[in-house]
Length: 159
Length: 292
Image (tube, rainbow over all chains, first blue to last red; front, side, top):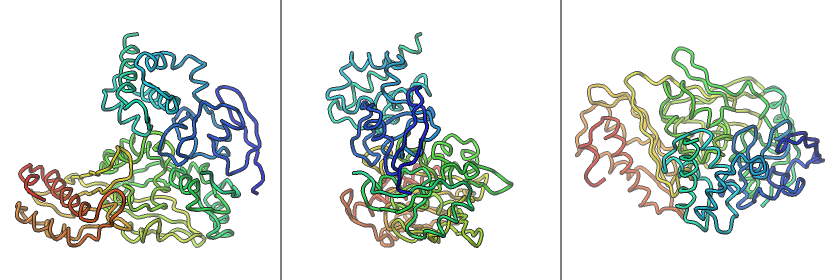
């Protein structure tokens, strides 16, 4: 039974059929099998948040989910969110505020921030901090990231 | 790191999951949300030969209220608890506590059954179960049995579950109308494991506490019910009495020392939490001041 198992899922709107070993986590499946390297692998035990993706509309740690668990699921990665234009304004706000330096945390940070902005129209800075508390950034000191998310929330309310 | 190789079986029913557990014993591990098991496997702290994935057993997910009992299915996710109006109405301690369980992405996957079966002494939900006098329902080859929460947690990552049993649900008494609750933890970062925390519920009548069950977490190998609380029940609490109880608490706790805090720091924080807790439950700011 340690042999590869068949899975079928949708990744960024495209149907994917694959054979995966049970031990393969979703992050490695996305990066190594599908070459979607925007999902970053940091700590591999759920602490850093760099591997955050959406599964069935909810954000999850892709290092803490097995690829076999995504059978029949809808998976969305930073590539999907970026290409669809869903977070174009948030990305622009990150650029404008210098809310990234090395960029390693950015895909996870963007997906987690977008998750909050979908759920709440007017998150205050404390709520933004709380929602992003599971995502480590070692460059910015977070203030610029909070600024960018706050600015995006305000701009979206104005639309 | 990556998890070592294992076989994988997707359970099709509770019965099927138990058959798999009976056939494989300690070689098997149950996977529910995976938010404790997967880190442990990635860190190679555990290396099961077989993973029994119960994720498809939707009958184990959900919250029901019947007269005075709240039943929470083992696969109920932390996010479900956080958003449930039934939990907010009948076990508000859990609503407060779950907001401190890790981060949104983890709360979307992690389950109450998984958290309890994992039994990390620094985690919030085991202490809440002890504070709320919950019972854990375990299903094994011989059928179901009910385990009181205070007997369920027996050590670090150790519970009363046998390798052949599956935790299927939790039963809680519905909070009484005149009950009050308190939850507070100290952690380096919001959502991290607590340096120390306190979960409690009590009946408040005529300015006095009854059925006061303060359960500390991250002060030992399992949730600790503070015996010193007995001094504070069914009596008019004065600052002097609270100081006396705090002192007894400090002597009673055998708090461990680790990278996060020394034993004496934990005992100090335990006293701070007791003071804040009693002050909040009775809505008496006069009890919150002074040295703990």
